[in-house]
Image 1: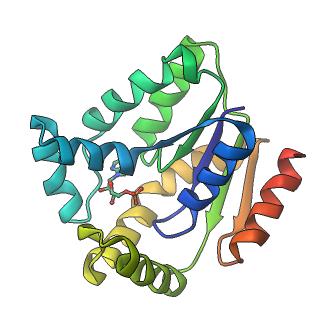
Image 2: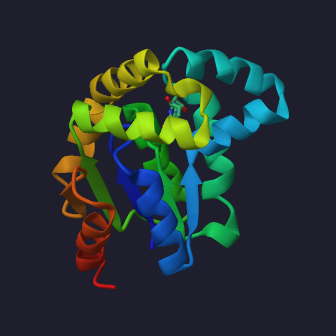
Length: 187
Ligand code: AMP
């Protein structure tokens, strides 16, 4: 089963993705993690990525799409993809559709975890203390939220009238969100 978890930073996508990976024996595809890995490796791409991330901007579509293509065409992961943080732009959404088509796959469910700015700020501040993430300073958090909301509106429109689209209140407790997802997946 291929699933997209969609929603602003701090909406709980990562938490639900990890749960689904365990439950369905799938693979989490987190673009944020893949990009942070490139930074850690100090690769040429990593040096470019760090500038986008530290400014709270989206990383260039070409960089992100190249990283994702390898994963979508990986036979081990076929039909077992939990997308967390991808697609975030219309260009990425269209690319994903093309690659899924080309590899005989589809998206089974899209979950939009919708959450307001106040809740996000509180959650990310907490996460910052635990994970010490460098891109989590408050002004960057707010920039990331605004960038997300502005840039992903077309992506939301692209998915929202599809029959496999589900909006879930991301302000609910983790277990409540999980229960809603389970109800839809019938697992
Ligand atoms: P995340 O861990 O998903 O919150 O992502 C952290 C940062 O990585 C974002 O603020 C962006 O700079 C970058 N990023 C993650 N996913 C994407 C994506 N699909 N497209 C562009 N940039 C991304």
